[in-house]
Length: 134
Image (cartoon, rainbow, N blue to C red; front, side, top):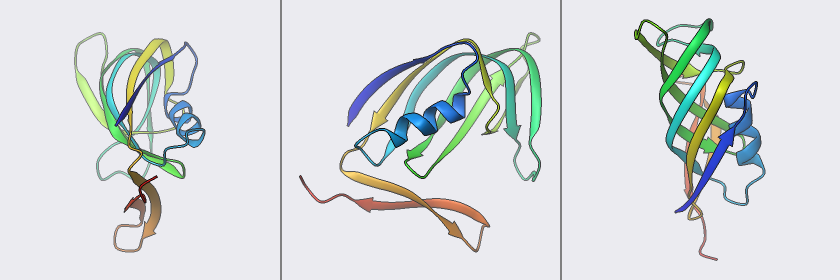
């Protein structure tokens, strides 16, 4: 595994930044190892929901996990607001960094991740393939 630190700045879209970053990498598979920071807007899709919801305010990123591939990412986030209440779900486009997002990403050169529509779930699900040795 190759480990890469990233820092996003105020106004960056957390999901779009990770999608753009992994698309530029030679490696075809990655995962989020750790993430801390804050958001001013969190765009989430909660479990079982079909619609996204926006949460505005001073939001702390408590955790972020998921897989990264050049043709799509699957990310879950947990955040808290000023009351300390925690909410989480699928991270969607439109989640904006407030002060910083400090990420540690693992790149997996021995694997290739891709996404393909799974008719059973209705979502583009992870496909895993071993890369030939280089």
